[in-house]
Length: 290
Ligand code: PSU
Ligand code: MN
Image (tube, rainbow, N blue to C red; front, side):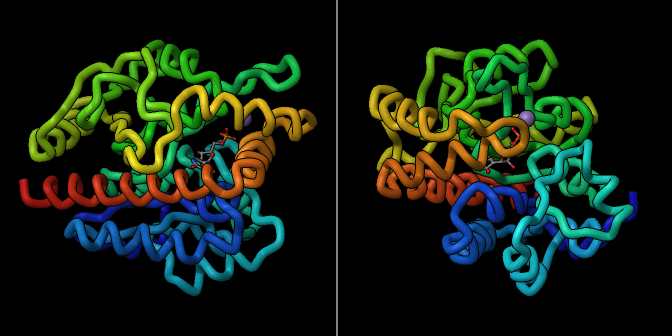
C-alpha cells in the first residue's frame, strides 16, 4: 500500500481515533501536543496516523489533525472500512487496527495508544470483537498500551490474545492491566524490567514473527482507579448507554464514563496515554540505536 509518510528516525505511530472519538473534542488538541512532547522528550519522533481526503498518512501535520477534528462525523476506521474510505477520498480516524496497517506500510515498528480494543461484554446479546485483535496477528508493530479498557470483557480479551498467539509482555508488571485499573489476576507472557532489554526483544520479535506484539504499561499510579471504584463508575455508564452498539459502543461508554466521573476517567485516560507515549518513545529510541 502506498502511504504518505513523513517519518523520520525513531518514529512512534499514534492513532487518530483516540483523539477524534476517545476524548471530548475540546481536549484533543492539548492531548495531541502532550503526547507529541512526551515522545520527543524520549528522543523519538511522533507520527500521527490517519486518512486525510482519502490519503493514508503516517506523520500528519498539525493542520491535518485540525481538519479531522473540525469535521462533524469523521468515521472510525478499522481494517474493514479503511479501503472504502481511501477509494471515496474521504477523511477517517484510524483505530489501533488501521493504524497498525498504515504504520507497518511505512516501516514504523512502535505505536503508542491508551488501550486496545478487545472482546466486548456483549451489550445486548451480540458478539462484538474488535478488529484490533486480528490486526495484532497481521502487522509487525509493537503496540504500547495499558491493556484493554475495563469497559470490555478483560478476561475474554486476554484469552483471545492467547488463542491468536499474540505475544503479550508487561513493562514492570506481571499482570495484564485493565486501563484505568493497574492490575488484574490475568497474566502476561513475560515481564520486562529493563527498557533496553525490552527494546531489543521487541525489535527481534517483530523481525522473527512478522506480526504484532502487545507491550502492557500500567496506568500511572497517581491516576489509577481501584477495581471497586471503577466498577461503580462503569455500572452507571452502562445504564446510560444501553442502546449503543457496534462501532458506537466504545465512544458512547467512554463519554458516559467521563461525564459521570466528573472528568476523573478522562484525566486517567489522558495520563496513561501520555505515559504510554513516553515509554514507546524510549523503546523506539533504543531500537534506533541498536
Ligand atoms: N483507547 C482509548 N480510547 C479510544 C480507543 C482506544 O483510550 O477511543 C479506540 C482505539 O482506536 C481502538 C478502538 O482501536 O477504540 C476500538 O474500537 P472497536 O471496539 O470498535 O474496534
Ligand atoms: Mn466492534
